Length: 419
Image (cartoon, rainbow, N blue to C red; front, side):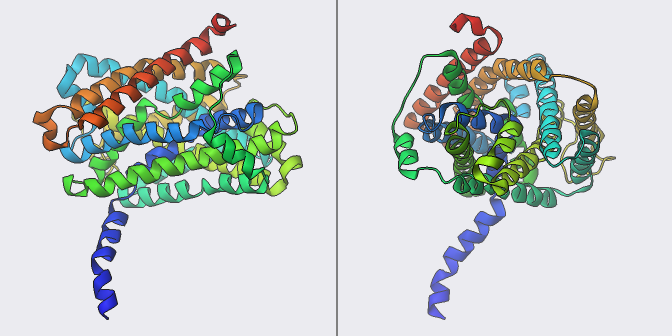
């Protein structure tokens, strides 16, 4: 009895953590969407284990940025778009929202492309899979409560473990993997520079800051929850990078080892079958489907939060369509357009994906710099402003991310400059 009594404070802290946990884990894991999975698959297939040393760096960058976003949310009780309007005015907020709307639509299209690609592996046409996926994610948000939606998203986050299973089933040389994790390498060729920058560029996207902060506000987290929400952010970031590491390992151990080149996550899933076994291939394809549906729900939801926050309109998953018509109409429009474009006889979505990448690159510096200004505003944040060491790390991280994003735009649109 005394033993259980002594454990009571610990059990209470665990219960509080479980009550708070969600926004950080969900936001970080959505980053492993169809585009992210493709990036890690290509990295492993083309360059083996040589890029694994980047993963701890990626995790640190993700933790720093997402922790600031979470802190802004719990301290101010406001979403990022709301704070940007207060800080920069309606005109700049409107411009930022316009860019994000276009970028997130293109990103949503790519997520439904991931749904189509993953189900084609199982022999199901996109004309069946995409409408069903669109209907499922629409019903989930429009008819669900925040608590129910968050539980579904947390389950979807857990399903990323299929990639860990694929990596283990590929039977990589673990000693070589361990050495690659702690041995930085770099090659000055266009392909390597492109994938190097893309890995980091996929880590921090503008929509992530808006979604995480909005979900914290929607969930009703307060300053008293800050310590637990910080754990949520750290756990989510580490888990997301852990999954990305195993995607790279799975492709390096099979595709790179057998000199098999791939261009998409679908190619990787199909190629894994003969090399690592059909179960590994199926798990990889299922992971792509889960990630695509998961992200197809989150990206439009993030956009709906941003639009309504910026102009003070009613928002939140707990509301009904009648109570928050613009919120749910924005969400619905992005789902319909994203899925509809995939059903058109379009041969390539490369231009759309490049455009969204460029728009994200334009938006990212603005969002991160504004975040740093907000987080260091003592009138707004009080004692929760960045400390000197954290602030130095944050500015260095932001500066590096901005430079790498600019390089990514140049590499994507003007590859001849690096030839």
